[in-house]
Image 1 (cartoon, one colour):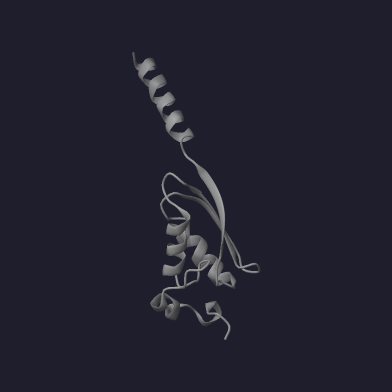
Image 2: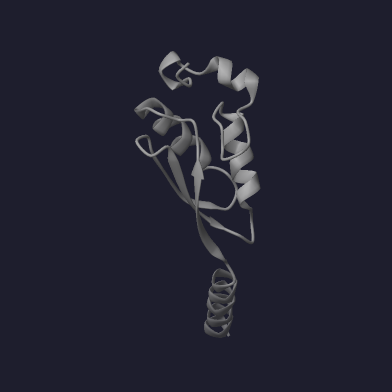
Length: 108
């Protein structure tokens, strides 16, 4: 009986896991240095549904792999703006932007 329950539990886990829709997207941001990289990667990876996040300061692109059944690109963009960075057409939260290190702010 225990083996049957274990087998059914395993099958259920596999079916739940296969229902995930992993999507990869790139977001243009105003981040530009290694400090920005650390801030973005260390915060966005904890957003619900995010599986992997990388930021390239040279191209200003955040690449995110996420489970589309748990989040969407708009939520991830909003999370980036709350850190003080622009995200595609969304502008950075002004209060968060003011708290950024000088090296992380947009060149004037």
